[in-house]
Image 1 (tube, rainbow, N blue to C red):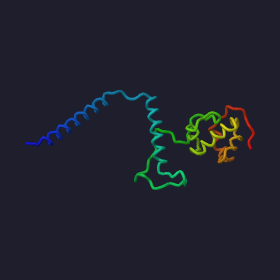
Image 2: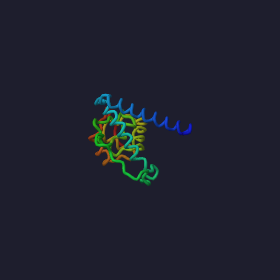
Image 3: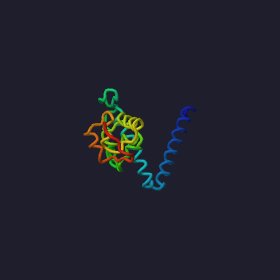
Image 4: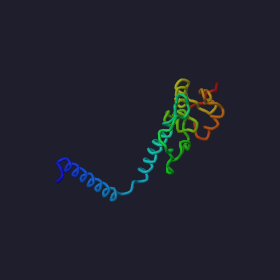
Length: 157
């Protein structure tokens, strides 16, 4: 004869089993997610993947520290890589969160771009972007196919 504690444990396990079965039945009968819901989920997964991939980095030394897990994080095949920007980004209006999606632009450089834009106004053209510390001719040339400008051009330094 089971003790009262054992009866409670068996009742708990039976309840968990019944709830698990109910969840599986509901998921089985629910319709497939819409394409827009899949795209939103892919965006969330990409954000999580990039956060996990950069989690082992030490931003002060800009070197990789020991990995957090023994297995490497593989990007999901349905998600575009970080450097694949689907539409040109307007550097005269884009927020930091959008600037970091550009190839070669990290959080610190994106912050410097926004601060320079707030201090001196819109860039207006690619040569003016070289005024931002850390952006030279090579970086500007790499960004050229991914950016656009909506402001009035200003002279580079």
